[in-house]
Image 1 (spheres, helix red, strand yellow):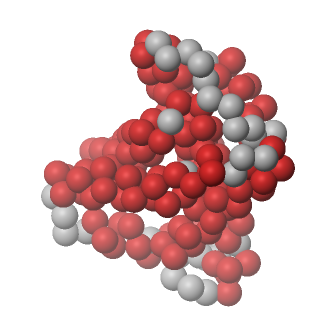
Image 2 (cartoon, rainbow, N blue to C red):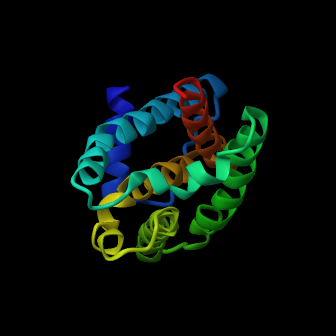
Length: 181
């Protein structure tokens, strides 16, 4: 796990368009599950910042659009939409094109730009206020980081792996939210 985390951090500092040549499924699923755990831990580590922002009255976290969208849905519909349909669409849009950038410089720029756009698209989950705009780098930080994580696995293993990782991440959050409701 530590090695995967360090490889991920190193990659995010200097993304390169290089596939992982190890095609063994046991190896790939091991890395996949480790990145899934890292993704979930990233969210857990950042969550207290959101609680503080909410507690200070800077942004109302109760008006999150995803919660509103899922409000009247059953678990199966939530999983279909949140863990299958949306991740597939978002990965096709935000991770699909990154391997089209062939030079090292354009790939690096493309990788970062798509991760940032992916993060900032999620600002639409919040009511549009001055505080949301000012705090947007913090509010979308988890999605920006996830964009990097999903981009890493996309480049190293392929697009289907980033779709699976994104879906598994969302599915885990949906299940946890459903269990704690």
